[in-house]
Image (cartoon, rainbow, N blue to C red; front, side, top):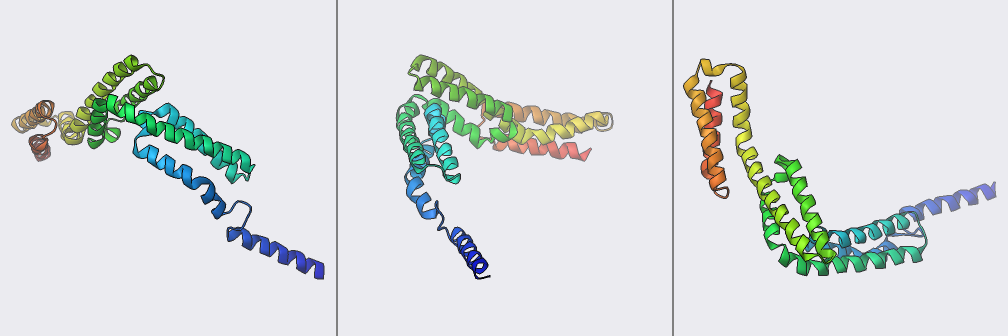
Length: 235
């Protein structure tokens, strides 16, 4: 009976120690192992290393994730430390790479920022993904030392981002008006209110033209799109 009580007490203590973080791999050990590499990863992301040095950044993430898995599985500390050291070095290397690539890719980065501002990933997801892939390829070519191919792919990525940006702006402002007009066409509303429908379609066309000519001043295009929606709702 006494032996059973002792075993139960030991078991309870073990559970309490685990919950309090006093196990083999507790919070204090995690911090001592991962704090530096976490900071290096944060700096790399801030420098857009995932965009500007994707191959090296990807290698860093592979080592980092492997170290985390090994840690969670309570693997060999020497292996965990080795992976962390490699990850840390790769994050720093990727950050250093951005100093060159950020200059070479200044135009495409500007186009990318504009596409992000236009929410291209939301409105024209497929076009956004295509642009991102081309950008990644350009950055990888530069990492390999092929500046000519990198410039060529960056130019393609710039065009894709600009196209995605424009189509996203159009989708943002004109999609609802076009849907209302399509519904009106399906219901043969033009036979009942031909003038109103024609005016609404004309406003949509003008808004599209305005966006093509001046995509960064969208006030007039937005006003025309809203007016087109209003007229389409009247019929």
